[in-house]
Length: 326
Image: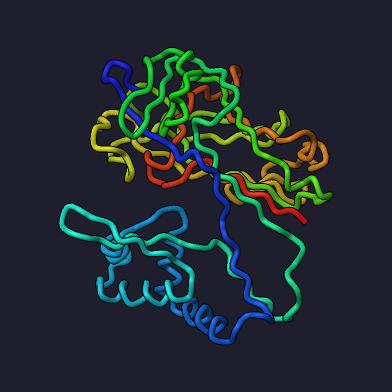
């Protein structure tokens, strides 16, 4: 980050949310089954749903990205909306009104055996990047909301201010941040089948440098899961969500990183990288479990980190924690 250039960043949604799973089984009306099956049968509509995986787009943006006429997108969006797969919100834009489309569900399950729903349930929490409970920060560092810089530059004390709840981007040259995730869903005797964390991040250096590596490590309940080597602190083009006041000389965007623990294997961006026994994590103890990210003091690539919220970078999301319990 550029402390001389007065780097500025954004605000996170403080409400955690749960993604919806759409179940189609023996009790579903035939027209409901057919509407969803028809909506998913068309290749363009599936591409639209894939595009909406992490972000919301206007109809015009979807048409541009997929290189199809706006009228074609309108028709297919209507089909998806009637099937209950997307939601459309009308917003006032600089040139009139525009329709903004977002994905309504992340799973569609067809019970072809017409059995009851499986016992596995999915719990998803969205953690604003400023909602950490512990911060051990190495300067240069700082944070910003979508409206401006929060506190002073290069002061770890900023990470203790109440204004951190509005952070939409934060950066540090080292150290760590720790978040808490409620575990009430485990109190009825369920066991964790899989757990995943999704977040947008990159390395950190004053201004930006696309080839600046950093080894960023992740822990659950103080048990190390894996280390991700971020290839750079990315700039050179504006982040898709960055507010207008944010200088083009600053960090602009990160990469979406996914960490998943399933059947005692840790997957980093869908590649198995480590083995961790789920029982070692003690996820059901107490009222919460912790997720921590940071750069070790002795890391080979000690290149800091940038963490992006819903209104900075390229992906309209905070930290998303998803747990399947059975």
